[in-house]
Amino acid sequence: MIMKNKLLSRLTPTSFLQAFVIQSMKLWRKKNLGQQSNDNYIQHLGLLASSSLEKIVREQLEYENTLTFDQYADVIIEIKNQIGGGFSRVSSDVGTIRVENTRCPFGEMVKETPELCQMTSSVFGGIAARNFGYAKVELKKRIATGDTYCDISIHLDKELSQARSGDEYHNQESSIISKLNATETIVQVTEGIEKNWYHCGTTESDPMQNSQNIVIGQSQAMQEVFDSIQIVAPTMVNVLIGGETGVGKEIVARTIHAESGRNPERFIAVNCAAIAETLIESALFGHEKGAFTGAYNVHKGFFERACTGTLFLDEIDSLSLSGQAKLLRILQEGEFERVGGRQAIKADVRIIVAANQSIKDMVLAGDFRKDLFYRLNVVPIQIPPLRDRREDIGALIDFFLMQLSNKYQKPRKTLGEKAWHKVMIYDWPGNIRELESVLEHAFLFAQGAIIEDVSIDCADLNLGHIYTGSLNMTKKKVAGEIEVKMLHDALKRFSGNVSATAKEIGMTPRAVHQKLKKHHIEAATYRDK
Image (tube, rainbow, N blue to C red; front, top):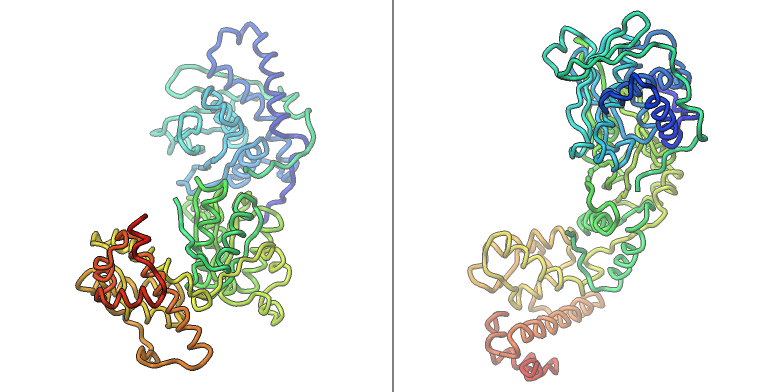
């Protein structure tokens, strides 16, 4: 069954709190309540409210007669979420309904008045007692007392709940009677007193709630990527990252998250290609089901686990047309339902996707939904392959070698001349991922501080060959540029000391002097600095 997602006609956070104040003033005027404790007083308010709140939600969900356990869960979750909560159902034992909450309806102020949690207990307990005759509400975790979320169990089987703590609720001769946890305090409310809880305000939908990974590159193409990241990061705009395998799409996605207001929250990366087609819906949206024993099992999907954070869907091009349709629904409606579930859950998630293939070509071929493409392609970021931005290779090598030194707790190592030439003329079909792997292997097996060679499996590499084609001339030119950079970097580190520079890059001082002369580099300028 798919629950109808209708907004409560008049219940909003504002109207609820207005009514709360009005009822508070009325109750405090009554002498018989004027001397009661805060918990007792708020319990009374919640029981009064529960009848009205149940009535209006029943009308919207079209529930008649006595509620079933599942319908009861729908009702209490709908009530709390419509007044500003973030409630959803989670796994529970037989005879128990368990819900979690990530956002308190009373906001941060609840930490100053944690007794307001008694409202939740009495509303949940009052509705349960009215329909099932008995309930015990156990507040296991509470945002009001410093927990990061609320964990609430409503035990509906009196015998099974005897060992549990919590407030008890009974339906007795047209009255709801509650007994506060571990006390002798009794609160009784006569049924039928249910006015003024939803007569204020208009219908409004609740708004969405509104280091570091390093992207390395100095090429013009990467500067354009940096500019795009800075523009899109503070927004909620959908981003489609394109590029070959291994170019660093996830790093770009993580950087967008890190630069956004969602940085303190979770970043979850999902490889869509690694999920079987039959399991994709369950993996993304979760599932829930009741067992024959009466227990209730819930699995939270990636969307729910990434709540208030960022969800990165890699290899979105591997998603079937059926999976694409389900993703489109979330982007359009901002909510989803677990497989087998009855409750619509808000999708307060920043979505970033990536693809190895051209989505535009897939649309033309009929393999990707056009409407989903338009939703995702608001801001496309294309990451060029490493062979097209060779000027970034030097910076990447420096970064990875520094990381490897820290990872293995070994002294820094640098590439020798032969290794530099090989990495600069190789085409790197595996892009940055392949470069990192090759450098790690070379770092581990190099005997000294200089990495003389790297294991690149390419039969065409012949360092003694003089290239004649335009591609080879380009590679030779870039190799010369990286040689200049290597000399400048080494001279800078050793303050112009040619002998130390020669030792680091694996050359004789005489050979270094020759290269300095060839490239018109003055070592003395670094000694002056």
